[in-house]
Amino acid sequence: MYEKYLEDINPLLNRLNAAENQLDAKVKNQSNPEPIAEEIYGWINEVRSKITVVKETMESQLADTMSSSGEVPEGLATAENPKYEIGSQAIIEADHMPGMKGALATIKGAYDTTAYSVTYYPTTGGEPVKDHKWVIHEELENPGEEPLEPGTEVTLNADHMEGMNGATAIIESAVDTTVYMLDFTTTYGEKVENHKWITESELKSIE
Image 1 (cartoon, one colour):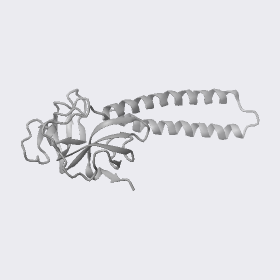
Image 2 (image 1 turned 90 degrees about the vertical axis):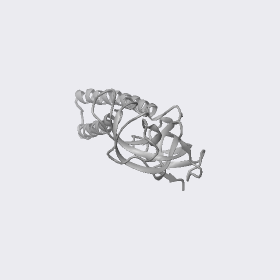
Image 3 (image 1 turned 30 degrees about the vertical axis):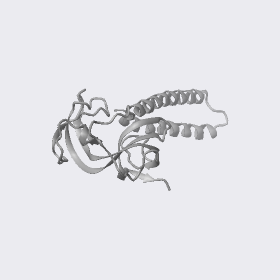
């Protein structure tokens, strides 16, 4: 929900900055700037301030969305020999959500499972959420023991996002892997706790 709006806000702030730069150049070439210039500076700063407040609010709410209680599904197997041990740190290479890629993360849990990318239809209505990463095998309703194939229709028992729990979904891809639960601070400064999930290939060791 918030991701799309955040993507639109930065270009809007950039346009405001460009307008201010153009005004600076015009005023600089005037020996006696017109009074309207000061009013325009005021309008630009007022709009920028309001947009910044909205952006910071969205970033905070998005970080809350990425956090969880830390509970894991029944039957989920703890990884015996994960590449990244609990308590260690790694760099997130995934960009599932704004502010994630490049963030330094602390490993809170490591589990062996099948991770699925899914397209699901929120129980709250609206457009389908495409290629959501990740939902794990143990977060599906009655999935059986064997990994499921792409194209399989499933019901989600996960609450990573609003409208996900109980939603109908289509599996887009599947990977047998170690998934990690993480604590991290987004690249824009918000704390995220017990984020689920990041796969092993989406983490990078600290050099």
